[in-house]
Amino acid sequence: MAYPEDQVPDHLLIKVEQRDDPVSVVSEDDARQRSAMYPKLMWGAPIFGAAEQDGGWWRILQLNDDEPQHARDNLASHFRKLHSELPDTAEHVSARAEYETAYELLDWEPADELTVAGRRYRIIRAQPFIRMGADGPEPPRPTDAELFPPGTSTLGRPQMDGFVLDPTVSTGLTDGLVRMELTSSFVSLDAGEQVRAESRRAVTTHPNVVLLPVSYTISGYVAGTWGQRGPATYATPQAARDGGSFSMRDFVLDENTAPEEFMAAYERARAAHQPPRTDDFEVNGVPCRVTRVEAFIRVGPDGPEGPRPSDRDSYPPPARQVHDLRAKGLMPDPD
Image (cartoon, rainbow, N blue to C red; front, side):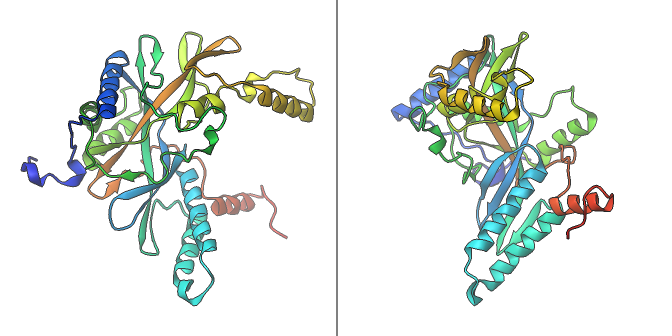
């Protein structure tokens, strides 16, 4: 459907703005060059989280879970926290009751939509991707921010937390072109038919995308293929170097070593580990690279996309899981 220029619905709008300040000019040039150097987009597994709507746009509460149920569990924890922070007084009795009802519901039911204390909450789905080029995955760009000095990167708050999903925010030319490309993108043909069908449907039901803050991970080159060394992503390149350049699998002891001795030796080795300060380095002879991870969320007229039926969701809510295990005799009844 065609709309007059000044009547395009917000959920369909991609606003491109020419920015002339020095930082924007350099950032735009970086983005343009990297799009040419790393032209292939490689999809990662979807990630899940929770968002809150309070009158206007949706705001991300958290977004780092690999399954929808993990996000529901975290949302239940959020409601428990809100409940505990409200004084147990007549003024707050209604809100406390709603928070309690919400987390008890999430303990039993896989609910993806709730309205609690006047606000809407939704389990949301994001699609990560990396850019690949002739030399491997895209490393950090010169204009990517390093917010903290080496060794203090854990002080930062995840950039996703509190991010507002506003598709009308203006963007530079390169990101605008990326958004337009992603609006019609869906999974590759090697996915199952159900996955492909749901992906095609999402292009219609949630026709716009919002690009999320960039995160970083560590990739390793093994047997001629680049792959992510671990599931974690980090808010800055240095956080990835600090947190992802050494892991338990990088520390090998004799298989007969007692667990407590192994853990003590591992902790000593980790304390002595000096994180790299470059984007390309080696760990035990394996070439590694700090890798830029981009992501987007599809949005429609009613807000961000939620989980799809084909998304992996491998276990039930916690109270339901305990109930089922007890019914099968696999867990004792409480005393």
